[in-house]
Amino acid sequence: MKPVITNFSRSALKGELATLGLKSFAATQVLQWLYQKRATSFEEMTNLSAENRQKLAEHFQIASTKVLDIKNSSDGTCLFLFELADGKKIEAVYIPAESGRKTICLSTQVGCAMDCTFCRTGQMGLLRNLTQGEILEQVLAVQNCFPEETITNLVFMGMGEPMANIPALVSSLEILQDQKLFNFSRRKITVSTAGLVPKMFEFVKQSNVHLAISLHAPNNALRDQLMPINKRYPLEQLMEFCRLHSKGPRNRVTFEYVMLKKVNDSLELCKELVQLLAGIPSKVNLIPFNPFPTVDYQPSDNNTIKQWVDILYHAGIQTNVRANRGRDILAACGQLAA
Ligand code: SF4
Image (tube, rainbow, N blue to C red):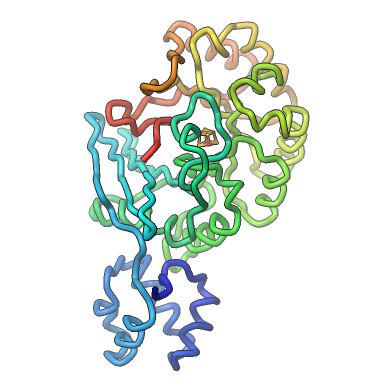
């Protein structure tokens, strides 16, 4: 099988094209065709000679993923189902908001090994990591489906634990942030993690994008139950990372907290959360649970969520309640399972 061109970094592509006799600037031309002009064939790359286009087509595949299905939610959210070259399937979600923000939620793995009890992806187990190309092609597919729209934000909160796939994550971020290619600013990209602490230290040395921590419980006993990763890297280690990371410039930490009725939503737990976050410049996103058929959890009621917002607000913690987008097509947070 021919190598897939979306799997190459800029420098690796330069080297590969040199072996085919192409000049070094050809790599930039090819990457701009792919990621700026969204070419879907080498034939379209008309500032390369016909001979070079022929060589490219002989040596590379232009893509490795196929869009199998697009489901539209009544709220404008779109769920994209992709088939990968080995037949495995992943999902990505396009989320337009009234504010004008247009976000893509991206997957980094097929399935996930973290086994969070409230997450549909976790029930699949981990099948494999995605490649750089498979991550970038999710962005391209959504952009191609909405050519008139400008994607403003990227969140790595789809299928998989991004910190378990750092090489492909970091190399795709380089292309996504490249000013001559996708040109997403660091402030518009958020990577979410369940708390693979050693990998988080590794990641922040290699990337400057925003990190969001999936917290979901303010103490180890409850977090152990909801997120088995907590048994390996308990809250003491996770919060130590957050304390150190938040000392950097503009490094306020975002915490995600899924609101599960009568599980993690008591007001005592909210006060415990306030204590846990003391001294860490934080923002909390409360996420009303999005039900799916194979779990018994229920979303917290609105009044409870409102009380949480009040307590956190009075403690000086910036707090948002995440809108439930795409629930009707199983495209909301924690519902992806391809
Ligand atoms: S919540 Fe995230 S880390 Fe946890 S199982 Fe689901 S995809 Fe994996």
